Image (cartoon, rainbow, N blue to C red; front, side, top):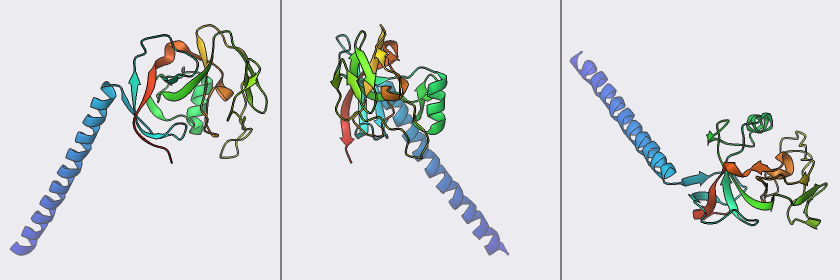
Length: 188
Protein backbone atom coordinates (compact mmCIF):
# COMPACT_ATOMS: atom_id res chain seq x y z
CA UNK A 1 0.00 0.00 0.00
CA UNK A 2 2.80 2.40 0.91
CA UNK A 3 4.54 1.58 -2.39
CA UNK A 4 1.51 2.56 -4.49
CA UNK A 5 1.09 5.78 -2.56
CA UNK A 6 4.77 6.59 -3.07
CA UNK A 7 4.51 5.82 -6.82
CA UNK A 8 1.53 8.17 -7.14
CA UNK A 9 3.41 10.92 -5.35
CA UNK A 10 6.43 10.41 -7.63
CA UNK A 11 4.20 10.55 -10.75
CA UNK A 12 2.61 13.76 -9.51
CA UNK A 13 6.01 15.28 -8.82
CA UNK A 14 7.20 14.19 -12.24
CA UNK A 15 4.19 15.91 -13.84
CA UNK A 16 4.83 19.06 -11.81
CA UNK A 17 8.49 19.13 -12.88
CA UNK A 18 7.43 18.66 -16.51
CA UNK A 19 4.83 21.46 -16.17
CA UNK A 20 7.44 23.71 -14.52
CA UNK A 21 9.90 23.13 -17.38
CA UNK A 22 7.31 23.78 -20.08
CA UNK A 23 6.10 26.92 -18.29
CA UNK A 24 9.67 28.18 -17.81
CA UNK A 25 10.57 27.67 -21.46
CA UNK A 26 7.31 29.29 -22.58
CA UNK A 27 7.80 32.32 -20.32
CA UNK A 28 11.42 32.69 -21.43
CA UNK A 29 10.37 32.51 -25.10
CA UNK A 30 7.56 35.02 -24.57
CA UNK A 31 9.92 37.38 -22.73
CA UNK A 32 12.50 37.08 -25.50
CA UNK A 33 9.86 37.87 -28.15
CA UNK A 34 8.65 40.91 -26.17
CA UNK A 35 12.26 42.10 -25.77
CA UNK A 36 12.93 41.73 -29.50
CA UNK A 37 9.63 43.43 -30.35
CA UNK A 38 10.53 46.38 -28.14
CA UNK A 39 13.79 46.74 -30.04
CA UNK A 40 11.94 46.88 -33.37
CA UNK A 41 12.41 43.25 -34.41
CA UNK A 42 9.59 41.33 -36.05
CA UNK A 43 9.21 37.77 -37.27
CA UNK A 44 7.69 37.43 -40.73
CA UNK A 45 5.75 34.22 -41.27
CA UNK A 46 3.98 35.33 -44.46
CA UNK A 47 5.17 34.53 -47.98
CA UNK A 48 4.91 38.17 -49.17
CA UNK A 49 8.57 38.65 -48.23
CA UNK A 50 11.25 36.17 -47.10
CA UNK A 51 10.43 34.31 -43.90
CA UNK A 52 12.45 35.14 -40.81
CA UNK A 53 13.63 37.95 -38.59
CA UNK A 54 13.23 41.56 -39.71
CA UNK A 55 13.86 44.89 -38.04
CA UNK A 56 11.89 48.13 -38.22
CA UNK A 57 14.36 50.95 -38.91
CA UNK A 58 13.48 54.61 -38.39
CA UNK A 59 14.01 56.39 -41.74
CA UNK A 60 16.31 59.43 -41.79
CA UNK A 61 14.55 60.78 -44.89
CA UNK A 62 11.06 60.85 -46.41
CA UNK A 63 9.59 57.54 -47.60
CA UNK A 64 10.24 57.05 -51.33
CA UNK A 65 9.05 54.79 -54.14
CA UNK A 66 11.03 51.57 -53.89
CA UNK A 67 11.24 51.57 -50.08
CA UNK A 68 10.31 48.35 -48.33
CA UNK A 69 8.28 49.36 -45.26
CA UNK A 70 6.44 48.02 -42.24
CA UNK A 71 2.98 49.55 -42.17
CA UNK A 72 -0.05 49.15 -39.94
CA UNK A 73 -3.23 48.97 -42.00
CA UNK A 74 -6.10 51.15 -40.78
CA UNK A 75 -8.92 49.51 -38.83
CA UNK A 76 -11.50 49.58 -41.64
CA UNK A 77 -14.32 47.18 -42.51
CA UNK A 78 -12.23 46.05 -45.49
CA UNK A 79 -9.30 45.15 -43.23
CA UNK A 80 -11.59 43.40 -40.72
CA UNK A 81 -12.93 41.27 -43.57
CA UNK A 82 -9.35 40.56 -44.72
CA UNK A 83 -8.48 39.46 -41.16
CA UNK A 84 -11.55 37.22 -41.04
CA UNK A 85 -10.50 35.62 -44.35
CA UNK A 86 -7.01 34.98 -43.00
CA UNK A 87 -5.16 37.46 -45.25
CA UNK A 88 -3.84 39.38 -42.24
CA UNK A 89 -2.13 37.89 -39.20
CA UNK A 90 -2.85 38.71 -35.55
CA UNK A 91 -0.74 41.57 -34.20
CA UNK A 92 -0.52 44.83 -32.31
CA UNK A 93 -1.76 47.27 -34.98
CA UNK A 94 -5.27 48.74 -34.85
CA UNK A 95 -7.83 46.03 -35.52
CA UNK A 96 -5.49 43.51 -33.82
CA UNK A 97 -3.50 42.81 -37.02
CA UNK A 98 0.23 42.50 -37.61
CA UNK A 99 2.03 45.16 -39.64
CA UNK A 100 2.43 44.43 -43.34
CA UNK A 101 5.81 44.33 -45.11
CA UNK A 102 5.31 45.89 -48.55
CA UNK A 103 7.18 47.92 -51.15
CA UNK A 104 6.04 51.48 -51.87
CA UNK A 105 5.34 51.61 -55.63
CA UNK A 106 3.52 54.95 -55.84
CA UNK A 107 3.05 58.06 -53.73
CA UNK A 108 0.77 61.08 -53.71
CA UNK A 109 -0.26 62.30 -57.17
CA UNK A 110 0.74 59.21 -59.14
CA UNK A 111 -1.93 57.50 -61.25
CA UNK A 112 -2.83 53.85 -60.66
CA UNK A 113 -4.68 51.79 -63.28
CA UNK A 114 -5.87 48.31 -62.34
CA UNK A 115 -7.22 45.75 -64.80
CA UNK A 116 -5.54 42.37 -65.28
CA UNK A 117 -2.37 43.91 -63.86
CA UNK A 118 -1.31 47.20 -62.25
CA UNK A 119 0.07 50.23 -64.07
CA UNK A 120 1.68 53.18 -62.33
CA UNK A 121 1.66 56.39 -64.41
CA UNK A 122 0.96 54.23 -67.48
CA UNK A 123 3.89 51.85 -66.91
CA UNK A 124 3.08 48.19 -66.18
CA UNK A 125 4.40 46.88 -62.89
CA UNK A 126 6.16 43.52 -63.00
CA UNK A 127 4.53 40.70 -61.01
CA UNK A 128 1.30 42.63 -60.55
CA UNK A 129 -1.30 40.27 -62.01
CA UNK A 130 -4.63 40.77 -60.26
CA UNK A 131 -6.22 37.59 -58.93
CA UNK A 132 -9.99 37.25 -59.30
CA UNK A 133 -10.15 34.46 -56.69
CA UNK A 134 -8.12 33.78 -53.56
CA UNK A 135 -6.53 30.43 -52.74
CA UNK A 136 -9.82 29.21 -51.24
CA UNK A 137 -11.89 30.08 -54.32
CA UNK A 138 -13.42 33.22 -52.79
CA UNK A 139 -13.91 36.25 -55.03
CA UNK A 140 -11.29 39.01 -54.80
CA UNK A 141 -12.36 42.55 -55.61
CA UNK A 142 -9.58 44.69 -57.08
CA UNK A 143 -9.24 48.33 -56.10
CA UNK A 144 -10.63 50.86 -58.60
CA UNK A 145 -7.32 52.66 -59.06
CA UNK A 146 -7.07 56.42 -59.63
CA UNK A 147 -4.79 59.13 -58.33
CA UNK A 148 -2.94 58.29 -55.09
CA UNK A 149 -4.33 60.80 -52.54
CA UNK A 150 -2.05 63.09 -50.52
CA UNK A 151 -0.59 61.46 -47.42
CA UNK A 152 -0.99 57.91 -48.76
CA UNK A 153 1.15 55.27 -50.48
CA UNK A 154 0.31 52.46 -52.90
CA UNK A 155 1.95 49.20 -51.80
CA UNK A 156 2.93 46.02 -53.60
CA UNK A 157 4.61 42.66 -53.12
CA UNK A 158 5.90 40.53 -55.97
CA UNK A 159 4.48 37.40 -54.35
CA UNK A 160 1.52 36.36 -56.55
CA UNK A 161 -0.81 35.68 -53.60
CA UNK A 162 0.01 38.91 -51.78
CA UNK A 163 -2.80 40.96 -50.29
CA UNK A 164 -1.66 44.48 -51.12
CA UNK A 165 -2.91 47.77 -52.58
CA UNK A 166 -4.15 45.93 -55.70
CA UNK A 167 -7.07 44.97 -53.48
CA UNK A 168 -7.30 47.54 -50.69
CA UNK A 169 -5.94 50.69 -52.36
CA UNK A 170 -3.52 53.25 -50.95
CA UNK A 171 -2.84 53.31 -47.19
CA UNK A 172 -2.15 56.34 -44.98
CA UNK A 173 1.54 57.16 -44.59
CA UNK A 174 1.02 57.76 -40.88
CA UNK A 175 0.64 53.97 -40.54
CA UNK A 176 4.26 53.45 -41.65
CA UNK A 177 6.29 52.16 -38.70
CA UNK A 178 9.61 52.39 -40.56
CA UNK A 179 11.77 50.78 -43.20
CA UNK A 180 11.91 46.98 -43.27
CA UNK A 181 15.42 45.60 -42.87
CA UNK A 182 16.20 41.89 -43.23
CA UNK A 183 18.15 40.48 -40.27
CA UNK A 184 18.01 36.73 -40.77
CA UNK A 185 15.68 35.42 -43.44
CA UNK A 186 14.96 32.42 -45.61
CA UNK A 187 13.31 32.62 -49.02
CA UNK A 188 11.70 29.22 -49.77
